[in-house]
Length: 168
Image (cartoon, rainbow, N blue to C red; front, side):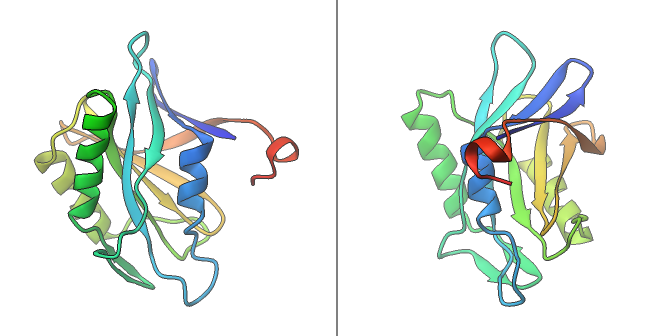
């Protein structure tokens, strides 16, 4: 299954199945599951304004994780840089993801501060970064542009079905 979100009237964010499944593997379904997260990696399509998330980093041993917090270590930045080199400068840093132990997750003040710091301090292509939060029932995604425009993206469509590949 792929998820497609509307970013602007002319741009979509597409999350491929492999990346989606890696994030969903860390859903906090039990009380002892800690928050998890990583970076989004992918590409800006040349023939359109669309952005594709092909890969995500997953929790690293150097991260700090608890039930209600996640601190992303610099190892994720090293992973992103390594993919950039391995992929011939085509694998781009697209944003940050993490989990929340909520049915329908909402960003905390700490999340918002982290995202603002990423947009102002990180090196990335394009006008914006993306910030999925994986909840126990839904995935919600926000975007923050270099100009400071912050908003939630709406799911436009799911491509693929549960019957065909066993995902949900």
